Image 1 (tube, helix red, strand yellow):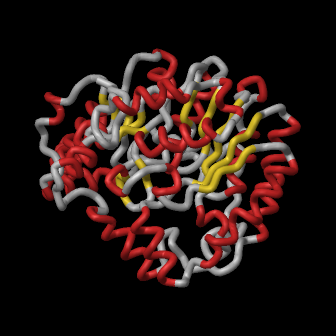
Image 2 (spheres, helix red, strand yellow):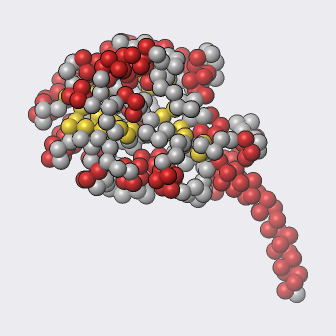
Image 3 (tube, helix red, strand yellow):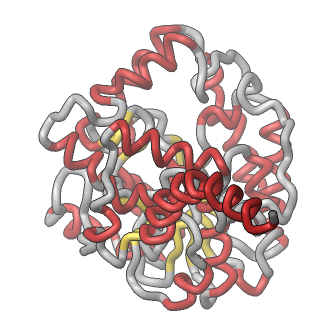
Length: 375
């Protein structure tokens, strides 16, 4: 009786085991799941970490890098729009902690999650335009101090198994990736699209850059069509707004006060849009808050004797739309131009980098998006 029952259980279990085994092998072998990121970070070997189904893990990746490694003299901190700063741009130790911040309130909370003896001497912060738009940033959803520490998920959720099968059916990848992917690639996005984070925290866009260079219309946000759609519909960070959000200004003041108390030198900037994107936003008359950001922010930075730069458009940092990954993410060349402009305006960052070196590096760039190789 018991034997027959066990045989029935085994019979009905086989399809379930088969269903899970293929995704488990793919997720394990590619490092998308079941991988100890802390061990990889401490090992300090060269890697490219890019997740397809676990993007929340990036917060932990950045956090654990800052916790486990020796103190970095310079950080860049912000959303995905600071990720193109590279360690090669600086003379002292640098880490790109971008992709950790969504709203202004996150900056201070993130700093408080890090031991003070790990704080940088120089902090470059990217202040996205929409952070000052009440219709996007209304002061709600404040993160807890352990948000980044607890953001890592090593085991997959059930939806992840479903996603693996869906992507195989769509032809995004095949079972061949189990045997052919490089060991330095961790996560399905890095394996399939050659996209992910380097050891210094900066991002490499891989396939996206290749597609843009060959004018492939399947590239993400090709000719900024998706960004223009956001502007037309007023959504996905491009919500309409007239006035600068007072809550955001208060949070900015609290951040700079905290940095001053902890002897952190802050250099703040607003990352540029592609120029055609900025022009379309201005012509719509739906983003009047953009024109008032500087006059509201500058006094706060001056109060703490910190620097602030406003690059609303590509042309304000001597860049072109051809150097943009999409409508609101510039490539390495754009961010080298940002640094060059800061340095030529007597930024304190002259203490930790050299304008002539950056200009020379840019003149020997790999392509219109990338300056420094990472092979």
